[in-house]
Length: 195
Image (cartoon, one colour):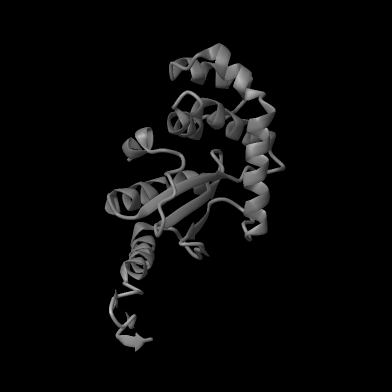
């Protein structure tokens, strides 16, 4: 189930004209854990198409462990192991520095670097920015998804997500500007002529 996440980037490069799936999640939230399979399947289904995925942090402000988990995933990201840390956090009943150090060692991270990055203010600022932007967009709890810039409502299953992604991809594939007659300058646009 998580195989694609072991190598999938936290954020794919923006592709002009691509449909973007954005997840606002919390590594300690059951709902965020629960949708992992659906997102993995969607990424598999639309692989090779103009479709990108981004994960944004939305930790619970009332839970210090939630913020610490987000910091840990970002510190692990600096060593190329965001998803491995993210997935390892799912099964931890308690998150603290000792647990994170043990996880970092188990994931073969450079422990000294990981612990240094764990308290890096720039990572905190990144997480705080994700949270603030999410809140401004209407996110109130994780997981919250946006597809093609639109807030997704309802239970995020593959059966519900796939048609929405496909619909957005279909719109991107429609040729808005069909042809331009070089001699006359007439634009043939969507079956109509302008010029």
